[in-house]
Length: 279
Length: 197
Image (tube, rainbow over all chains, first blue to last red; front, top):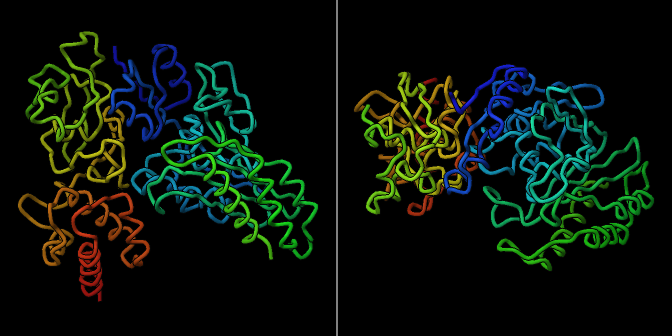
């Protein structure tokens, strides 16, 4: 029996997962293949889902963009910058062009790396994730999807089909700290989204905790400080926002940076992102 | 096409210390160590030819299959983690790192390697420009550079300096300092613009 399935429908994918219960779900492969190449993974079987139509394409709606899990970062970078500027900016920092042509938004979510570049944006945007299984479909807020380092609520037999990202009116920024502009795993990153209609500021932070995190205190503090008609806040309030963001993270020291550096860097990029977003 | 593994499925030769680095698949299982390895047989479309891959371990990368099973060694192996770009190929018209593509999932996709950019024994304008500009030193990264820049020139003929730098941001060269590579790119851009005029 074949140990790889290349389903072209969702039903075929569920059938393949039943027939190959130990199979790894494969999308773009950019995380998976590194582990295989270095012998950290020996897949007994593979279900490759990039051909499933329910995972492809995106739909731009009035209030959200519905993105297929198999949509690549290249597509998001090139085609969704108008609707989802922070996500497109994050897309541009994912790996290299070679990686972005293969790597998918669904794979980024499923891998759930603390350093996943797209994840802070999805968290700040209050995105939702659509999961399909033979039992049906469920929709999970992205904020509840990642439960720990590379751990998610995805159940056996479930496939991420869509990612729904609300559209907001207002400036958006994505900033990432690394040793060069291209091809880096972030030392820390921040996505800042301003919602002028709802009068909120949302910030998602990456590589500073086991999962992407928000900074709720900083968000509610700055929302009350902003003159929403002028989209302006006093410099001391902007600085205080950065301090509150710093106080919200729990970074670790690893080979990419120390905890102290990450705390300081995340404060700097949070402050900078807010400065750029305000008048 | 010859199978360097002599039909055993998974390479033993890669554990020969004289060839290990260049072959890749350093973490792949040994065929004599695991008799229950899941093997697959499939066909890949490489440079407009359908090439059979017989009894290959399911985890093999496209790079490994191209180099070790299909006799296409133009794509180079260095990092095996998508960092260096030496293994760049076109897959359905998009440049990808073949080390990070599961070969068995490339079935049905059109693969173009550096070998397939021109006919046998011919040079493309990009390859010619690299020679003209002295853009090659050790040469190891060059196939990947050629594939990535060919993709950009075909897709975006008037690409800016920044777009060009971004297009090869995933291709590492440790010899040239890139200046001559940029010059080769500009030469092709100018030649193609002149040809259109």
